[in-house]
Image (cartoon, rainbow, N blue to C red):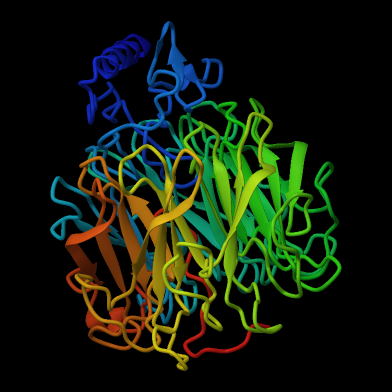
Length: 594
């Protein structure tokens, strides 16, 4: 197996050096594609290439552009992070055909029981997402453990990664209100990829009561509220971080995060970890309603070849209530560890802005390499940031850049809709940065950032929550407003039209669904009323050399999925999207935060 993979790696490396291997993929003897280009935590787009073989792991030297060097050849030569033309692109690829696929959560679908939930999967192709290749998964699906129950909300969160290292992406699905001993304890299902796509063969069901798992299920824990996947121990198999934001660890709802490590047979209990603010080496202490683990993002912030984990505790109190913090745990050969752990907040030395009452720093997170230096950077949403008064909730986000020593304050940025060059301007209750997703939409080798404002009111003086999305471009100097793309359902060429309470941008995801080397953007509109109230939709806009362009865009819904209309009504299709955080708990009507 190693000989075959090494030969493939050598051939592709030679092709790259000759400038002729863009888009090359090769199938290994296990059937998976040998050239997956994954991001750290979210799917990356550009020349950040993971090793072709698990054996290449962290022992192989890693160049500053994030590629592994195999012998005297590197998958990408030093200093070639920025490229002209499209990069080789991959994304969540459940069937290994080289086209990214899209998983869409509809957690309020009435599958045999009210709000039991479902997940739709649409497979990619040379022409983009293929309406003829769809699956619907639920707890009523054959081979899936457990059964649909009232209010389970299967599909609340979605995570993707190759947990068994076979070259096919696998799918993790959070069921936040699943009963385990008591109500709302939560579970996570895992479906494994194959040459035919996702299958229930070897499907797993994880909870805090699973054999060998540290801790135990308790009422209201909501195990699976958030998910993030990446390779924390560098063994070539992705691992899964599971947020349990209502876990009681020394205080009510202080929160915790479980880590399950990948293995040849998939995720395993062996070596699993549970982290919380009382863990040795973690800054701070557990306090009531901190909700450590409410948000998660994975990325290699120090470029050492081991993924690191960002953990949001947005309700953390400091000098005032709910200012929020983000913890960083670094990966190693032994997995995540507290050594060199960091804590970030708006009062951290050198960070722009300052912590204020109920800003909730860390309510959204996304990791990617915006400046192309080979170190992942962290976008941190502060969508309750106020400018006009104590409850105006205009929102903003920070960018903290990676380095050889990890995240550092040097060069950090703070963005809002009044930042120079940004289209639109701040409005009360916009909650700018409520959702974040990173991908390379223009194929220049620098990751770009999509920023959702699902509560945005497009008409002055209204409170209609129609929603909007900004797209900021990456560059050698980091994120820039130059070419900021501002999208609403009223934008020229965008499918559909904005309606009151649509919440366009309530979830976001990026992947290359048509394999052209440019990432495409999926925008969740879970409160869209198509054929019935709140049945939901997902808008997909394709990338190009000039960034996102509405040509060939499409509005997807649950219609045609095989689910009866009664199960689609109120399903909120688009609540969660592949590898991205679920839709925020946006109310149907505008209301002040609590």
